[in-house]
Length: 332
Ligand SMILES: Nc1ncnc2c1ncn2[C@@H]1O[C@H](COP(=O)(O)OP(=O)(O)O)[C@@H](O)[C@H]1O
Ligand SMILES: [Mg+2]
Image 1 (spheres, rainbow, N blue to C red):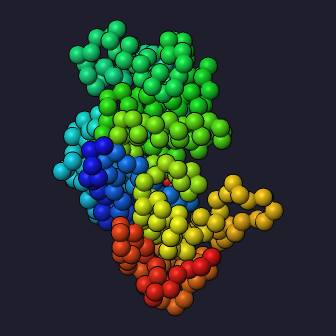
Image 2: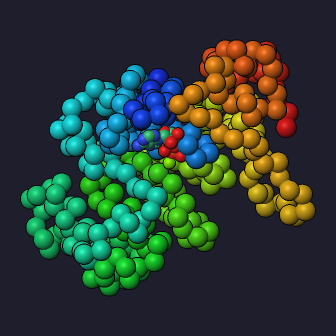
Image 3: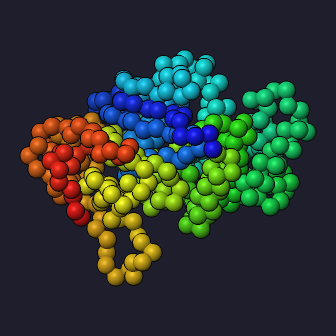
């Protein structure tokens, strides 16, 4: 492994979307980092700003989306300050992305083989067809596909969801990116396939020293995979830390609530787990204080009045919570 130096460092990211109802504050303070050879997880319920953060970094925001503040340092360059042309050359070569729904990401008119060779040749035009075909087939076998030759000749509609996602990950890795961003890559797949894809990413990390930004709504999914975890809610970072800090010493009530919602192996299934209650915030009309305050069981006056600052808890662990600041810990 190339040491623990930081490959991507996003700080103070702020993204909004202009809509007829008003500005949607999709991300108000996004900060996270990925170190070389490590997996960072961004976790939070649907709508917390995970995908928008990733898209903003890659310059792929939907129409109406605007980066208002922040930096995203990647190999000495601020991705948020680059022009479209430079970003395009980084996307797919230095940084690749895998999306939630592999079925819709593949073009039904192309065989897997023609898709993969095209991906490879668009980035290295000098590669001959035969060489591109062989490299693609080899990448499919790295993905754990036993008969790559057969899969290469198939059309996407004859492949399972799990197989399509392997093809998408193969495509993402063909150009040997330094960073893979995976946005809920297993959410559309059933549980056993989900496990296989997670093991595959784990293996790619271990064998290739690949760096991954892994986005998911499920804190349970990242437990095994991630070295670091950033927990987001309502466009803000609630807590960040190493996986053990998050799983064993969670400080933020939101992290604790997410943790208590993970079904555990030792649960006999008798007791229903404390689910997160209340409605997620309206991103057009954010609460004045802590965005989690309206749903927080520990909410007190300060929480409704002011936004908590991010508090350094030492050892790379931090949380943004008034209760933590007061020295108290939310014991759920
Ligand atoms: N194209 C868009 N136009 C308007 N609002 C958007 C758009 N994309 C995302 N949002 C809003 O931004 C917030 C964050 O979205 P997103 O990053 O997709 O959440 P997550 O990936 O965590 O589920 C949500 O409130 C969502 O409704
Ligand atoms: Mg998303």
